[in-house]
Image (cartoon, rainbow over all chains, first blue to last red; front, side, top):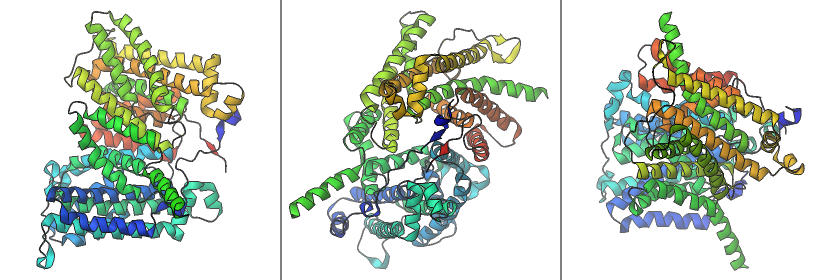
Length: 337
Length: 292
Protein backbone atom coordinates (compact mmCIF):
# COMPACT_ATOMS: atom_id res chain seq x y z
CA UNK A 1 0.00 0.00 0.00
CA UNK A 2 1.42 3.34 -0.92
CA UNK A 3 2.24 6.02 1.57
CA UNK A 4 -0.20 8.35 -0.12
CA UNK A 5 -3.03 6.12 0.95
CA UNK A 6 -2.23 6.50 4.58
CA UNK A 7 -2.16 10.24 4.66
CA UNK A 8 -5.69 11.41 4.34
CA UNK A 9 -6.83 14.92 4.77
CA UNK A 10 -9.54 14.31 7.28
CA UNK A 11 -12.92 14.87 5.77
CA UNK A 12 -15.12 16.93 8.01
CA UNK A 13 -17.77 14.75 9.54
CA UNK A 14 -19.93 17.69 10.45
CA UNK A 15 -20.35 20.75 8.30
CA UNK A 16 -19.13 24.05 9.55
CA UNK A 17 -22.08 26.18 10.52
CA UNK A 18 -21.35 29.81 11.18
CA UNK A 19 -22.42 31.04 14.58
CA UNK A 20 -24.98 33.47 13.23
CA UNK A 21 -26.66 30.79 11.14
CA UNK A 22 -27.31 28.75 14.28
CA UNK A 23 -30.36 30.64 15.47
CA UNK A 24 -33.49 32.39 14.29
CA UNK A 25 -33.91 36.13 14.18
CA UNK A 26 -35.45 37.87 17.20
CA UNK A 27 -38.75 38.57 15.44
CA UNK A 28 -39.28 35.00 14.34
CA UNK A 29 -38.27 33.65 17.75
CA UNK A 30 -40.78 35.87 19.52
CA UNK A 31 -43.57 34.89 17.11
CA UNK A 32 -42.87 31.21 17.73
CA UNK A 33 -42.81 31.82 21.47
CA UNK A 34 -46.16 33.62 21.39
CA UNK A 35 -47.65 30.78 19.36
CA UNK A 36 -46.32 28.28 21.88
CA UNK A 37 -47.90 30.30 24.67
CA UNK A 38 -51.31 30.68 23.04
CA UNK A 39 -51.96 27.37 21.28
CA UNK A 40 -52.46 25.27 24.47
CA UNK A 41 -55.35 27.52 25.49
CA UNK A 42 -57.23 26.44 22.37
CA UNK A 43 -56.64 22.68 22.12
CA UNK A 44 -57.48 19.45 23.92
CA UNK A 45 -55.48 17.95 26.77
CA UNK A 46 -54.06 15.15 24.63
CA UNK A 47 -52.61 17.62 22.15
CA UNK A 48 -51.17 19.63 25.03
CA UNK A 49 -49.47 16.44 26.24
CA UNK A 50 -48.04 15.86 22.77
CA UNK A 51 -46.75 19.41 22.64
CA UNK A 52 -45.10 18.86 26.01
CA UNK A 53 -43.38 15.77 24.63
CA UNK A 54 -42.38 17.75 21.56
CA UNK A 55 -40.62 20.30 23.74
CA UNK A 56 -38.97 17.60 25.85
CA UNK A 57 -37.62 15.66 22.89
CA UNK A 58 -36.71 18.98 21.34
CA UNK A 59 -34.49 19.73 24.33
CA UNK A 60 -32.90 16.28 24.04
CA UNK A 61 -32.24 16.79 20.32
CA UNK A 62 -30.86 20.23 21.11
CA UNK A 63 -28.42 18.62 23.51
CA UNK A 64 -27.23 16.25 20.80
CA UNK A 65 -27.02 19.21 18.46
CA UNK A 66 -24.65 20.99 20.81
CA UNK A 67 -22.46 17.90 20.91
CA UNK A 68 -22.53 17.06 17.20
CA UNK A 69 -23.31 20.35 15.53
CA UNK A 70 -21.28 22.34 18.05
CA UNK A 71 -18.22 20.25 18.84
CA UNK A 72 -18.38 17.74 15.98
CA UNK A 73 -18.59 14.61 18.14
CA UNK A 74 -21.02 11.90 17.27
CA UNK A 75 -23.14 10.14 19.86
CA UNK A 76 -25.58 7.26 19.76
CA UNK A 77 -25.66 7.15 23.54
CA UNK A 78 -28.03 10.00 24.30
CA UNK A 79 -30.71 7.58 25.47
CA UNK A 80 -28.42 6.56 28.34
CA UNK A 81 -28.13 10.14 29.60
CA UNK A 82 -31.85 10.60 29.11
CA UNK A 83 -32.45 7.47 31.19
CA UNK A 84 -30.15 8.63 33.98
CA UNK A 85 -31.95 11.97 34.10
CA UNK A 86 -35.36 10.33 34.12
CA UNK A 87 -34.42 7.89 36.87
CA UNK A 88 -32.77 10.59 38.96
CA UNK A 89 -35.93 12.67 38.88
CA UNK A 90 -38.19 9.70 39.50
CA UNK A 91 -36.17 8.33 42.41
CA UNK A 92 -35.80 11.73 44.05
CA UNK A 93 -39.51 12.39 43.74
CA UNK A 94 -40.77 9.00 44.81
CA UNK A 95 -38.19 7.89 47.39
CA UNK A 96 -36.89 11.16 48.79
CA UNK A 97 -40.01 13.26 48.31
CA UNK A 98 -38.12 16.09 46.62
CA UNK A 99 -40.18 18.71 44.76
CA UNK A 100 -40.36 17.91 41.03
CA UNK A 101 -38.92 21.24 39.96
CA UNK A 102 -35.89 20.75 42.20
CA UNK A 103 -35.15 17.32 40.79
CA UNK A 104 -34.37 18.76 37.35
CA UNK A 105 -31.20 20.67 38.23
CA UNK A 106 -30.03 17.67 40.26
CA UNK A 107 -30.68 15.37 37.29
CA UNK A 108 -28.82 17.83 35.10
CA UNK A 109 -25.83 17.95 37.42
CA UNK A 110 -25.61 14.18 37.80
CA UNK A 111 -25.82 13.71 34.06
CA UNK A 112 -23.24 16.42 33.51
CA UNK A 113 -20.84 14.57 35.78
CA UNK A 114 -21.68 11.27 34.09
CA UNK A 115 -21.21 12.71 30.61
CA UNK A 116 -17.99 14.44 31.61
CA UNK A 117 -16.64 11.17 33.03
CA UNK A 118 -17.72 9.24 29.94
CA UNK A 119 -16.09 11.87 27.77
CA UNK A 120 -12.68 11.03 29.22
CA UNK A 121 -12.16 7.59 27.62
CA UNK A 122 -14.17 8.71 24.60
CA UNK A 123 -11.50 11.35 23.97
CA UNK A 124 -9.29 8.86 22.24
CA UNK A 125 -12.04 7.81 19.88
CA UNK A 126 -13.60 9.65 17.00
CA UNK A 127 -16.01 9.02 14.15
CA UNK A 128 -17.41 5.48 13.96
CA UNK A 129 -15.34 4.39 16.94
CA UNK A 130 -16.94 7.02 19.11
CA UNK A 131 -20.30 6.01 17.67
CA UNK A 132 -19.66 2.43 18.77
CA UNK A 133 -18.57 3.48 22.25
CA UNK A 134 -21.66 5.60 22.80
CA UNK A 135 -23.77 2.89 21.25
CA UNK A 136 -22.38 0.45 23.82
CA UNK A 137 -23.42 2.84 26.56
CA UNK A 138 -26.93 3.00 25.13
CA UNK A 139 -27.32 -0.78 24.93
CA UNK A 140 -25.87 -1.28 28.40
CA UNK A 141 -28.09 1.24 30.15
CA UNK A 142 -31.44 -0.64 30.15
CA UNK A 143 -29.64 -3.78 31.36
CA UNK A 144 -27.91 -1.89 34.16
CA UNK A 145 -31.19 -0.39 35.28
CA UNK A 146 -32.68 -3.87 35.51
CA UNK A 147 -29.88 -5.13 37.78
CA UNK A 148 -30.96 -6.68 41.07
CA UNK A 149 -28.62 -4.49 43.17
CA UNK A 150 -30.52 -1.32 42.38
CA UNK A 151 -33.94 -2.85 42.36
CA UNK A 152 -34.96 -1.25 45.62
CA UNK A 153 -34.40 2.16 44.06
CA UNK A 154 -35.19 1.62 40.40
CA UNK A 155 -38.05 -0.83 40.73
CA UNK A 156 -36.20 -3.26 38.40
CA UNK A 157 -38.04 -4.30 35.26
CA UNK A 158 -41.30 -2.89 36.62
CA UNK A 159 -39.99 0.65 36.73
CA UNK A 160 -41.37 3.44 38.85
CA UNK A 161 -44.61 5.34 38.73
CA UNK A 162 -44.26 9.09 39.14
CA UNK A 163 -47.04 11.33 40.42
CA UNK A 164 -48.00 14.18 38.16
CA UNK A 165 -47.69 17.58 39.81
CA UNK A 166 -50.71 19.87 40.26
CA UNK A 167 -50.68 23.50 39.26
CA UNK A 168 -49.35 25.55 42.18
CA UNK A 169 -50.96 28.54 43.95
CA UNK A 170 -54.41 27.19 43.05
CA UNK A 171 -54.06 28.29 39.43
CA UNK A 172 -57.13 27.22 37.43
CA UNK A 173 -55.25 24.91 35.07
CA UNK A 174 -55.34 21.22 34.28
CA UNK A 175 -52.25 19.21 35.26
CA UNK A 176 -51.34 18.77 31.60
CA UNK A 177 -51.52 22.46 30.90
CA UNK A 178 -49.48 23.37 33.96
CA UNK A 179 -46.85 20.82 33.01
CA UNK A 180 -46.78 22.22 29.50
CA UNK A 181 -46.08 25.74 30.69
CA UNK A 182 -43.54 24.47 33.19
CA UNK A 183 -41.78 22.55 30.38
CA UNK A 184 -41.98 25.59 28.13
CA UNK A 185 -40.22 27.76 30.72
CA UNK A 186 -37.47 25.17 31.19
CA UNK A 187 -37.15 24.74 27.43
CA UNK A 188 -36.85 28.45 26.75
CA UNK A 189 -34.27 28.78 29.51
CA UNK A 190 -32.21 25.93 28.09
CA UNK A 191 -32.58 27.20 24.53
CA UNK A 192 -31.43 30.71 25.40
CA UNK A 193 -28.65 29.28 27.56
CA UNK A 194 -27.45 27.02 24.74
CA UNK A 195 -27.41 29.84 22.23
CA UNK A 196 -25.41 31.97 24.59
CA UNK A 197 -23.10 29.08 25.31
CA UNK A 198 -22.35 28.62 21.62
CA UNK A 199 -21.76 32.36 21.24
CA UNK A 200 -19.35 32.41 24.14
CA UNK A 201 -15.65 31.66 24.30
CA UNK A 202 -16.40 28.00 25.06
CA UNK A 203 -18.80 27.80 22.12
CA UNK A 204 -16.16 29.12 19.79
CA UNK A 205 -13.74 26.55 21.20
CA UNK A 206 -16.30 23.79 20.46
CA UNK A 207 -16.71 24.99 16.91
CA UNK A 208 -13.01 25.30 16.29
CA UNK A 209 -12.62 21.67 17.37
CA UNK A 210 -15.45 20.68 15.05
CA UNK A 211 -13.91 22.49 12.10
CA UNK A 212 -10.32 21.45 12.58
CA UNK A 213 -9.02 19.80 15.69
CA UNK A 214 -5.33 20.19 14.96
CA UNK A 215 -5.68 23.83 14.03
CA UNK A 216 -7.74 24.42 17.17
CA UNK A 217 -5.11 22.91 19.42
CA UNK A 218 -2.38 24.95 17.78
CA UNK A 219 -4.46 28.05 18.47
CA UNK A 220 -4.31 27.21 22.15
CA UNK A 221 -7.70 25.54 22.58
CA UNK A 222 -7.53 22.83 25.22
CA UNK A 223 -9.00 20.16 22.96
CA UNK A 224 -9.47 17.42 25.54
CA UNK A 225 -11.06 19.75 28.08
CA UNK A 226 -13.54 21.20 25.61
CA UNK A 227 -14.39 17.85 24.08
CA UNK A 228 -15.26 16.35 27.46
CA UNK A 229 -17.00 19.58 28.42
CA UNK A 230 -19.18 19.30 25.32
CA UNK A 231 -20.05 15.77 26.35
CA UNK A 232 -20.86 16.92 29.85
CA UNK A 233 -23.05 19.83 28.77
CA UNK A 234 -24.87 17.69 26.25
CA UNK A 235 -25.43 14.94 28.81
CA UNK A 236 -26.57 17.46 31.41
CA UNK A 237 -29.19 18.99 29.13
CA UNK A 238 -30.32 15.53 28.02
CA UNK A 239 -30.64 14.66 31.70
CA UNK A 240 -32.95 17.60 32.32
CA UNK A 241 -35.01 16.51 29.31
CA UNK A 242 -35.10 13.00 30.75
CA UNK A 243 -36.30 14.32 34.10
CA UNK A 244 -39.03 16.33 32.41
CA UNK A 245 -39.93 13.28 30.36
CA UNK A 246 -40.31 11.15 33.49
CA UNK A 247 -42.63 13.74 35.05
CA UNK A 248 -44.68 14.12 31.87
CA UNK A 249 -45.06 10.40 31.14
CA UNK A 250 -45.50 9.63 34.87
CA UNK A 251 -43.58 6.42 34.47
CA UNK A 252 -39.99 5.26 34.08
CA UNK A 253 -38.97 1.75 33.01
CA UNK A 254 -35.71 0.43 31.58
CA UNK A 255 -37.24 -0.51 28.26
CA UNK A 256 -38.36 3.04 27.49
CA UNK A 257 -34.73 4.06 27.12
CA UNK A 258 -33.31 1.66 24.57
CA UNK A 259 -31.12 2.38 21.59
CA UNK A 260 -34.28 3.14 19.60
CA UNK A 261 -34.63 6.36 21.56
CA UNK A 262 -31.03 7.32 20.80
CA UNK A 263 -31.59 6.64 17.10
CA UNK A 264 -34.79 8.71 17.12
CA UNK A 265 -32.94 11.62 18.69
CA UNK A 266 -30.25 11.28 16.05
CA UNK A 267 -32.86 11.30 13.27
CA UNK A 268 -34.46 14.35 14.86
CA UNK A 269 -31.16 16.15 14.70
CA UNK A 270 -30.59 15.29 11.04
CA UNK A 271 -34.10 16.24 10.00
CA UNK A 272 -33.91 19.49 11.91
CA UNK A 273 -30.53 20.36 10.51
CA UNK A 274 -27.23 19.56 12.21
CA UNK A 275 -25.92 22.62 13.99
CA UNK A 276 -29.12 24.65 13.71
CA UNK A 277 -30.58 24.85 17.19
CA UNK A 278 -34.20 25.84 16.35
CA UNK A 279 -34.27 22.84 14.01
CA UNK A 280 -34.11 20.59 17.05
CA UNK A 281 -37.79 21.25 17.65
CA UNK A 282 -38.69 20.60 14.02
CA UNK A 283 -36.77 17.34 14.27
CA UNK A 284 -38.53 16.48 17.49
CA UNK A 285 -41.88 17.03 15.79
CA UNK A 286 -40.73 14.67 13.05
CA UNK A 287 -39.81 11.85 15.42
CA UNK A 288 -43.04 12.24 17.42
CA UNK A 289 -45.58 12.65 14.65
CA UNK A 290 -44.20 10.87 11.57
CA UNK A 291 -44.29 7.35 13.10
CA UNK A 292 -47.96 7.99 13.96
CA UNK A 293 -48.67 9.23 10.45
CA UNK A 294 -46.94 6.16 9.02
CA UNK A 295 -49.05 3.94 11.27
CA UNK A 296 -52.24 5.61 10.09
CA UNK A 297 -51.30 5.20 6.42
CA UNK A 298 -50.61 1.48 6.68
CA UNK A 299 -50.56 -0.66 9.81
CA UNK A 300 -48.60 -3.59 8.40
CA UNK A 301 -46.10 -1.49 6.52
CA UNK A 302 -45.70 1.35 9.00
CA UNK A 303 -41.92 0.84 9.13
CA UNK A 304 -41.65 1.00 5.37
CA UNK A 305 -43.83 4.10 5.18
CA UNK A 306 -41.70 5.74 7.86
CA UNK A 307 -38.56 4.87 5.91
CA UNK A 308 -40.00 6.24 2.68
CA UNK A 309 -41.06 9.47 4.39
CA UNK A 310 -37.60 9.79 5.91
CA UNK A 311 -36.02 9.27 2.49
CA UNK A 312 -38.33 11.90 1.01
CA UNK A 313 -37.26 14.38 3.65
CA UNK A 314 -33.55 13.79 3.21
CA UNK A 315 -33.85 13.83 -0.58
CA UNK A 316 -35.70 17.11 -0.60
CA UNK A 317 -33.76 18.81 2.19
CA UNK A 318 -30.45 17.01 2.78
CA UNK A 319 -29.41 19.78 5.16
CA UNK A 320 -32.56 19.48 7.23
CA UNK A 321 -35.07 22.13 8.14
CA UNK A 322 -32.24 24.67 8.23
CA UNK A 323 -32.29 24.64 4.45
CA UNK A 324 -35.93 25.79 4.41
CA UNK A 325 -35.15 28.50 6.93
CA UNK A 326 -32.24 29.77 4.86
CA UNK A 327 -34.36 29.91 1.70
CA UNK A 328 -37.07 31.67 3.71
CA UNK A 329 -34.63 34.24 4.98
CA UNK A 330 -33.34 34.93 1.49
CA UNK A 331 -36.88 35.37 0.20
CA UNK A 332 -37.71 37.71 3.06
CA UNK A 333 -34.56 39.69 2.37
CA UNK A 334 -35.49 40.02 -1.29
CA UNK A 335 -39.01 41.16 -0.47
CA UNK A 336 -37.73 43.85 1.82
CA UNK A 337 -35.59 45.30 -0.94
CA UNK B 1 -9.00 -26.42 31.83
CA UNK B 2 -11.37 -28.51 29.77
CA UNK B 3 -14.15 -26.05 30.47
CA UNK B 4 -11.86 -23.30 29.25
CA UNK B 5 -10.99 -25.01 25.93
CA UNK B 6 -14.62 -25.93 25.41
CA UNK B 7 -15.71 -22.37 25.96
CA UNK B 8 -13.09 -21.14 23.52
CA UNK B 9 -14.30 -23.63 20.92
CA UNK B 10 -17.89 -22.57 21.46
CA UNK B 11 -16.74 -18.97 21.20
CA UNK B 12 -15.04 -19.65 17.90
CA UNK B 13 -18.15 -21.23 16.48
CA UNK B 14 -20.36 -18.26 17.41
CA UNK B 15 -17.50 -16.01 16.38
CA UNK B 16 -17.74 -17.38 12.86
CA UNK B 17 -21.19 -15.79 12.58
CA UNK B 18 -19.85 -12.43 13.65
CA UNK B 19 -16.84 -12.82 11.38
CA UNK B 20 -19.12 -13.37 8.37
CA UNK B 21 -21.09 -10.25 9.15
CA UNK B 22 -18.02 -8.20 9.99
CA UNK B 23 -16.51 -9.11 6.65
CA UNK B 24 -19.55 -7.76 4.84
CA UNK B 25 -19.42 -4.60 6.93
CA UNK B 26 -15.76 -4.00 6.21
CA UNK B 27 -16.36 -4.57 2.51
CA UNK B 28 -18.89 -1.81 2.28
CA UNK B 29 -16.83 0.39 4.56
CA UNK B 30 -13.94 0.05 2.14
CA UNK B 31 -16.15 0.98 -0.76
CA UNK B 32 -18.16 3.85 0.67
CA UNK B 33 -16.33 4.86 3.83
CA UNK B 34 -19.41 4.55 6.08
CA UNK B 35 -20.90 1.87 8.23
CA UNK B 36 -24.10 0.69 6.63
CA UNK B 37 -26.72 0.20 9.33
CA UNK B 38 -29.01 -1.55 6.86
CA UNK B 39 -26.42 -4.22 6.07
CA UNK B 40 -27.98 -6.77 8.39
CA UNK B 41 -31.43 -6.22 6.98
CA UNK B 42 -30.15 -6.56 3.42
CA UNK B 43 -28.60 -9.88 4.41
CA UNK B 44 -31.83 -10.96 6.10
CA UNK B 45 -33.86 -10.12 2.99
CA UNK B 46 -31.46 -12.11 0.78
CA UNK B 47 -31.75 -15.06 3.13
CA UNK B 48 -35.52 -14.90 2.86
CA UNK B 49 -35.23 -14.90 -0.93
CA UNK B 50 -33.13 -18.05 -0.84
CA UNK B 51 -35.60 -19.64 1.59
CA UNK B 52 -38.45 -18.77 -0.76
CA UNK B 53 -36.56 -20.28 -3.71
CA UNK B 54 -36.02 -23.47 -1.73
CA UNK B 55 -39.68 -23.55 -0.79
CA UNK B 56 -40.39 -23.59 -4.51
CA UNK B 57 -38.30 -26.74 -4.76
CA UNK B 58 -35.02 -25.35 -6.07
CA UNK B 59 -31.99 -27.25 -4.68
CA UNK B 60 -29.80 -25.55 -2.08
CA UNK B 61 -26.75 -24.65 -4.12
CA UNK B 62 -28.76 -23.41 -7.09
CA UNK B 63 -30.77 -21.22 -4.75
CA UNK B 64 -27.51 -20.11 -3.17
CA UNK B 65 -26.08 -18.91 -6.47
CA UNK B 66 -29.35 -17.31 -7.57
CA UNK B 67 -29.56 -15.46 -4.26
CA UNK B 68 -26.00 -14.20 -4.62
CA UNK B 69 -26.80 -12.89 -8.08
CA UNK B 70 -29.99 -11.28 -6.83
CA UNK B 71 -28.26 -9.66 -3.85
CA UNK B 72 -25.47 -8.33 -6.01
CA UNK B 73 -27.96 -6.75 -8.40
CA UNK B 74 -30.14 -5.47 -5.56
CA UNK B 75 -27.14 -3.91 -3.81
CA UNK B 76 -26.22 -2.04 -6.97
CA UNK B 77 -29.83 -1.02 -7.56
CA UNK B 78 -30.17 0.37 -4.03
CA UNK B 79 -27.00 2.37 -4.43
CA UNK B 80 -28.04 3.77 -7.81
CA UNK B 81 -31.58 4.60 -6.81
CA UNK B 82 -31.25 5.79 -3.24
CA UNK B 83 -27.70 6.67 -2.29
CA UNK B 84 -26.17 8.07 -5.45
CA UNK B 85 -28.46 11.11 -5.23
CA UNK B 86 -27.25 11.58 -1.67
CA UNK B 87 -23.53 11.57 -2.51
CA UNK B 88 -23.27 15.29 -1.95
CA UNK B 89 -25.43 15.30 1.18
CA UNK B 90 -23.76 15.59 4.59
CA UNK B 91 -22.53 12.30 6.06
CA UNK B 92 -25.02 12.33 8.91
CA UNK B 93 -27.85 12.65 6.39
CA UNK B 94 -26.56 9.55 4.64
CA UNK B 95 -26.55 7.74 7.97
CA UNK B 96 -30.20 8.73 8.36
CA UNK B 97 -30.71 7.22 4.90
CA UNK B 98 -29.27 3.92 6.14
CA UNK B 99 -31.70 3.97 9.04
CA UNK B 100 -34.57 4.63 6.65
CA UNK B 101 -33.46 1.73 4.45
CA UNK B 102 -33.27 -0.48 7.53
CA UNK B 103 -36.82 0.40 8.46
CA UNK B 104 -38.14 -0.19 4.93
CA UNK B 105 -36.50 -3.58 4.42
CA UNK B 106 -37.43 -4.84 7.87
CA UNK B 107 -41.04 -3.83 7.49
CA UNK B 108 -41.36 -5.27 3.96
CA UNK B 109 -39.86 -8.61 4.97
CA UNK B 110 -42.25 -8.72 7.90
CA UNK B 111 -45.20 -8.13 5.60
CA UNK B 112 -44.14 -10.64 2.92
CA UNK B 113 -42.95 -13.49 5.13
CA UNK B 114 -44.46 -12.51 8.52
CA UNK B 115 -42.65 -12.62 11.85
CA UNK B 116 -42.90 -16.31 12.69
CA UNK B 117 -39.61 -18.11 13.19
CA UNK B 118 -38.64 -20.41 10.33
CA UNK B 119 -36.24 -23.33 10.10
CA UNK B 120 -33.45 -22.87 7.59
CA UNK B 121 -31.59 -25.80 6.02
CA UNK B 122 -27.84 -26.25 6.17
CA UNK B 123 -25.80 -27.82 3.39
CA UNK B 124 -23.25 -29.24 5.83
CA UNK B 125 -25.46 -31.27 8.14
CA UNK B 126 -25.53 -30.74 11.87
CA UNK B 127 -23.76 -33.77 13.28
CA UNK B 128 -20.86 -33.17 15.72
CA UNK B 129 -17.66 -32.14 13.97
CA UNK B 130 -14.63 -34.41 14.61
CA UNK B 131 -16.31 -35.85 17.68
CA UNK B 132 -16.62 -32.47 19.41
CA UNK B 133 -20.00 -31.71 20.93
CA UNK B 134 -19.45 -27.98 20.69
CA UNK B 135 -18.79 -27.51 17.00
CA UNK B 136 -21.19 -29.03 14.52
CA UNK B 137 -20.35 -29.70 10.91
CA UNK B 138 -22.45 -26.70 10.00
CA UNK B 139 -20.39 -24.40 12.15
CA UNK B 140 -17.19 -25.87 10.78
CA UNK B 141 -18.54 -25.37 7.28
CA UNK B 142 -19.43 -21.80 8.16
CA UNK B 143 -15.90 -21.13 9.38
CA UNK B 144 -14.58 -22.71 6.19
CA UNK B 145 -16.78 -20.52 3.99
CA UNK B 146 -15.80 -17.39 5.91
CA UNK B 147 -12.12 -18.15 5.44
CA UNK B 148 -12.71 -18.97 1.78
CA UNK B 149 -14.45 -15.64 1.24
CA UNK B 150 -11.62 -13.87 2.98
CA UNK B 151 -9.10 -15.55 0.72
CA UNK B 152 -11.14 -14.71 -2.35
CA UNK B 153 -11.42 -11.08 -1.33
CA UNK B 154 -7.73 -10.89 -0.64
CA UNK B 155 -6.93 -12.09 -4.15
CA UNK B 156 -9.58 -9.87 -5.65
CA UNK B 157 -8.28 -6.71 -4.03
CA UNK B 158 -4.64 -7.59 -4.39
CA UNK B 159 -4.33 -9.06 -7.84
CA UNK B 160 -7.15 -7.86 -10.07
CA UNK B 161 -7.35 -4.56 -11.88
CA UNK B 162 -10.85 -3.91 -10.73
CA UNK B 163 -9.91 -4.65 -7.12
CA UNK B 164 -7.11 -2.13 -7.35
CA UNK B 165 -9.45 0.39 -8.94
CA UNK B 166 -11.92 -0.09 -6.08
CA UNK B 167 -9.25 0.47 -3.47
CA UNK B 168 -8.09 3.57 -5.27
CA UNK B 169 -11.62 4.93 -5.56
CA UNK B 170 -12.18 4.40 -1.84
CA UNK B 171 -8.96 5.88 -0.55
CA UNK B 172 -8.38 8.85 -2.83
CA UNK B 173 -11.47 9.41 -5.00
CA UNK B 174 -10.23 12.54 -6.71
CA UNK B 175 -6.88 11.12 -7.77
CA UNK B 176 -8.63 7.92 -8.83
CA UNK B 177 -10.94 9.90 -11.07
CA UNK B 178 -7.95 11.65 -12.61
CA UNK B 179 -6.40 8.36 -13.70
CA UNK B 180 -9.65 7.36 -15.36
CA UNK B 181 -11.42 5.22 -12.78
CA UNK B 182 -15.18 5.52 -12.76
CA UNK B 183 -15.43 6.05 -8.99
CA UNK B 184 -19.19 6.28 -8.97
CA UNK B 185 -19.51 2.77 -10.42
CA UNK B 186 -16.84 1.48 -8.06
CA UNK B 187 -19.05 2.52 -5.17
CA UNK B 188 -22.02 0.75 -6.74
CA UNK B 189 -19.87 -2.33 -7.23
CA UNK B 190 -18.85 -2.13 -3.57
CA UNK B 191 -22.52 -2.09 -2.58
CA UNK B 192 -23.20 -5.09 -4.79
CA UNK B 193 -20.31 -7.07 -3.36
CA UNK B 194 -21.19 -6.16 0.19
CA UNK B 195 -24.77 -7.25 -0.41
CA UNK B 196 -23.59 -10.56 -1.86
CA UNK B 197 -21.22 -11.21 1.05
CA UNK B 198 -23.99 -10.25 3.42
CA UNK B 199 -26.23 -12.76 1.68
CA UNK B 200 -23.66 -15.52 2.23
CA UNK B 201 -23.40 -14.46 5.86
CA UNK B 202 -27.18 -14.50 6.20
CA UNK B 203 -27.51 -17.97 4.67
CA UNK B 204 -24.78 -19.30 6.94
CA UNK B 205 -26.20 -17.68 10.05
CA UNK B 206 -29.85 -18.55 9.47
CA UNK B 207 -29.59 -22.26 10.46
CA UNK B 208 -28.14 -21.18 13.83
CA UNK B 209 -30.32 -18.22 14.79
CA UNK B 210 -33.37 -19.27 12.71
CA UNK B 211 -34.98 -17.18 10.04
CA UNK B 212 -37.14 -14.20 10.95
CA UNK B 213 -37.10 -10.50 10.05
CA UNK B 214 -35.29 -9.45 13.22
CA UNK B 215 -32.70 -12.22 13.13
CA UNK B 216 -29.87 -9.91 12.17
CA UNK B 217 -30.23 -7.30 14.88
CA UNK B 218 -28.01 -8.96 17.46
CA UNK B 219 -25.65 -10.30 14.84
CA UNK B 220 -25.24 -6.88 13.28
CA UNK B 221 -24.29 -5.30 16.62
CA UNK B 222 -21.65 -7.96 17.25
CA UNK B 223 -20.57 -7.72 13.63
CA UNK B 224 -20.00 -3.98 13.97
CA UNK B 225 -18.13 -4.52 17.19
CA UNK B 226 -15.99 -7.18 15.51
CA UNK B 227 -15.28 -5.01 12.49
CA UNK B 228 -14.34 -2.05 14.65
CA UNK B 229 -12.23 -4.21 16.94
CA UNK B 230 -10.33 -5.73 14.05
CA UNK B 231 -9.92 -2.41 12.34
CA UNK B 232 -12.34 -1.17 9.72
CA UNK B 233 -9.70 -1.03 7.02
CA UNK B 234 -8.75 -4.68 7.21
CA UNK B 235 -10.92 -7.61 6.04
CA UNK B 236 -8.52 -9.96 7.81
CA UNK B 237 -8.88 -7.94 11.00
CA UNK B 238 -12.65 -8.18 10.69
CA UNK B 239 -12.55 -11.97 10.65
CA UNK B 240 -10.12 -12.12 13.56
CA UNK B 241 -12.24 -9.55 15.37
CA UNK B 242 -15.31 -11.70 14.80
CA UNK B 243 -13.71 -14.75 16.38
CA UNK B 244 -12.32 -12.66 19.26
CA UNK B 245 -15.73 -11.16 20.01
CA UNK B 246 -17.28 -14.63 20.01
CA UNK B 247 -14.65 -15.94 22.42
CA UNK B 248 -14.84 -12.82 24.63
CA UNK B 249 -18.56 -13.12 24.90
CA UNK B 250 -18.44 -16.78 25.86
CA UNK B 251 -15.68 -16.42 28.43
CA UNK B 252 -17.39 -13.43 30.02
CA UNK B 253 -20.61 -15.40 30.29
CA UNK B 254 -18.82 -18.36 31.88
CA UNK B 255 -16.28 -16.86 34.24
CA UNK B 256 -17.74 -13.62 35.55
CA UNK B 257 -20.38 -14.48 38.13
CA UNK B 258 -23.78 -12.87 37.87
CA UNK B 259 -23.50 -12.22 34.16
CA UNK B 260 -26.61 -13.56 32.53
CA UNK B 261 -27.41 -13.46 28.86
CA UNK B 262 -28.53 -9.89 29.21
CA UNK B 263 -25.23 -8.49 30.46
CA UNK B 264 -23.09 -10.37 27.96
CA UNK B 265 -23.50 -7.75 25.27
CA UNK B 266 -22.68 -4.68 27.39
CA UNK B 267 -19.62 -6.39 28.86
CA UNK B 268 -18.37 -7.56 25.49
CA UNK B 269 -18.81 -4.02 24.17
CA UNK B 270 -17.05 -2.56 27.19
CA UNK B 271 -14.09 -4.87 26.58
CA UNK B 272 -13.95 -3.80 22.95
CA UNK B 273 -13.97 -0.16 23.94
CA UNK B 274 -11.15 -0.82 26.35
CA UNK B 275 -9.17 -2.30 23.48
CA UNK B 276 -10.03 0.66 21.28
CA UNK B 277 -8.91 3.15 23.89
CA UNK B 278 -5.50 1.50 23.82
CA UNK B 279 -5.45 1.01 20.07
CA UNK B 280 -7.83 3.53 18.48
CA UNK B 281 -7.63 2.20 14.92
CA UNK B 282 -8.51 -1.35 15.90
CA UNK B 283 -6.18 -4.30 16.17
CA UNK B 284 -5.24 -4.57 12.50
CA UNK B 285 -6.36 -1.22 11.15
CA UNK B 286 -3.95 1.28 9.75
CA UNK B 287 -4.01 4.50 11.74
CA UNK B 288 -5.01 7.43 9.59
CA UNK B 289 -2.55 10.25 9.55
CA UNK B 290 -4.27 13.59 9.75
CA UNK B 291 -3.17 16.52 7.71
CA UNK B 292 -4.02 20.05 8.71
